[in-house]
Image 1 (tube, rainbow, N blue to C red):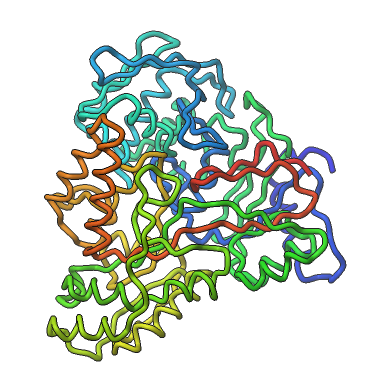
Image 2 (image 1 turned 120 degrees about the vertical axis):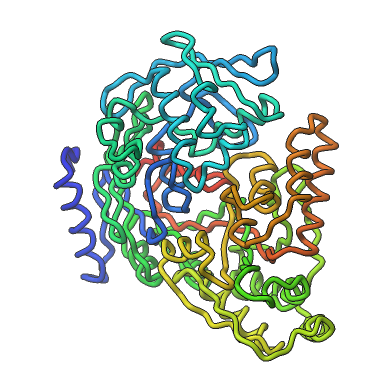
Length: 528
C-alpha cells in the first residue's frame, strides 16, 4: 500500500476496515503501513494535553507530543532528555535552566523557548483537571508568568515557589500536562481567552512521532506520521477504532481486521492464548482500581463506619483470581507496587458478618440502596456485579447504572454520584503523584480524588505536603507509608486491585512498547 497522504484516504481506510469486520471468517490483513487498534475510546474528553486526563487521551500523548524531559521507557524512575538537550539546577534550589535541542513541530515550526513558556503557562491558567500537577510547584494563574522565562533563544528558565527539590520538579515535568505545544499553530485558534483549548480537543500541535489526522468522537482516532519528527515512526498511520463490545474486539484481532486489541475479558484472553496468528502481551501496570464514595451524597455515605464496613464487602480474591485471572492482583493501598514506599499488605477480606456488625454498631439501618455509576465496559461491569452480589448480603442494594466513560467521569468530577468504580494511574514516577490525589484536600480548591469524594482533610493535607518536601529518601518513604496506612484504614476510598494489562497483538506486529504507567504507550517503533 502506498503512503497515506490525506485525511480522506485515512478515513477511507478506517471505513474499509469497519466493513471488513464481520464480513468473512477468512483471516484478513490490515494494510502494511497502517496499525489498527481495537479498544474503547468512549472515555476521551479532550486531546489537549492541558486537559486530557482519561486513559485514551493519556495513551496518545507520548505519540503526539514531547516534553522537556521524559521517563525512560524501560525504567520510568529514570529521567532523560527530550526537547531539552540538557538542564542545570540553580543554586537557589528552586530553579532549572533547560537548553533546548533542535526540534520541529508537525507544522514545520521550530520548537522555541516561547513555545515552552506558552505551553506551561496556558496549562496553569486553563486550570483543567490535571492542573494540580503543575500546581505542586506553587504555580498559579497569577504567578506563573514570572516563573517561566526566556534566557535566550536556546535556553528557558523555570522557577518554582513550593518547597520542593529539582528532582521532584523534573518528575512533574514528565507528566502529559507538561507537553510542549506549537504556539504559532495554537494561538490563532484561541477563542474567548481559551488558549486554543477548544481546537486542541480534537486536533494536535506537537513534535511527537504522530499528529492527529482526524478524530470522530466514539468512532475513531486516526494518527498520521509526523514528517518533521526528529525520530520518524516506522508506520504511516495508526487507526484507533472505538469498539465498545469486547467480543467484537476479539473477533477483529482474531480475524486479522485489527493488529492490536485492548480491554478483553479474562475468558477471551485465555481463548486467544492458543490461537495461531496472535500473541498475548502481559504488561505490569501502575493502575489501581478503587471504589469512590461521595461523602456529601447522604449521611450514610459520609459515615466512617460505612467506609469500614464496605472494606469487608469486597470479594478481593474472588475478583482477582476468578473474574480477572491475571489481569489484576489484590492491592489495598494508594501507591502501586513499583513505586517507593508502596504497601503490599492486604488487611481486608470478604467478611459479611463483620460488615453487618460494624453497620449495626454504628446505627446504620439496612436495607438501603446506593446508586452505583460504572463505566459501560469490561472489566468494570464484571467487578460491579461482584460487588453488587456481596454488598447485597449485608442488606445494601447497589443500583448499577452503566454509562459512557466520559459521562461517568463528568459526574464524578461534579459530585453528581453516590458511589462509583474508578481507577487511578500515576501522572509521574513519584509517590506524591498518588498521594496528592488521595491525601490532599484542605479546602476543596484542588482537583483531587479527595475533593470528588467531598472529603476535606486539612491534617492529612499538611502531612502530605511535608512528605513531598522531605529530602531524606528513607524518611520520605516512611511518611508515605504512614499516609497509606491512614487512608487504608479509614477513608471514602476502598482500594482493591492493581492492574496487569493484557494486550493482544497480531503476530505480525513487532516492537510494540508499553510501560508501567498509562502514558507509556509507544507506536513509533512498531513495525509489521
